[in-house]
Length: 172
Image 1 (spheres, one colour):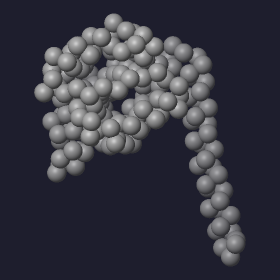
Image 2 (tube, rainbow, N blue to C red):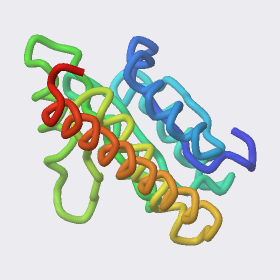
Image 3 (cartoon, rainbow, N blue to C red):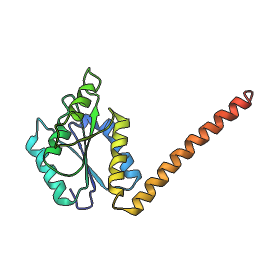
Image 4 (spheres, rainbow, N blue to C red):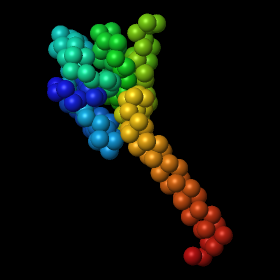
């Protein structure tokens, strides 16, 4: 991990990249330096703790952890740091991610994990939440985030205008 990394993305398996790449895409869009690593709360617990300790030492500001099934990665990470941890539950079992959601969100008092929705939307929102946290101390990033939100609103308004136009002139 290098000293410019601001967000550490952790995944329980390389198969999680299909979903977690959405978080990376959003962080790239905001020019937020990040690193992605595969580590497991159960299969490589010492490695997981070492990555968290290294992240703290290198100045990482937020950790995003995506995992499916028992999904203890975010909780284990949170137990070893005071950095903000955002958990992304992944759909990896016949329970369609509900097991991961519950394992991630049901943390005991004192060890918080911010938890987003299951899957790609959750990965995107985890990255956006990380951007919001970092933007608290970065005015330039805060301005970029405000512009992003403004552009989202403009797209919705443009879609509404097109719909109204079609309703008023259905033959066109």
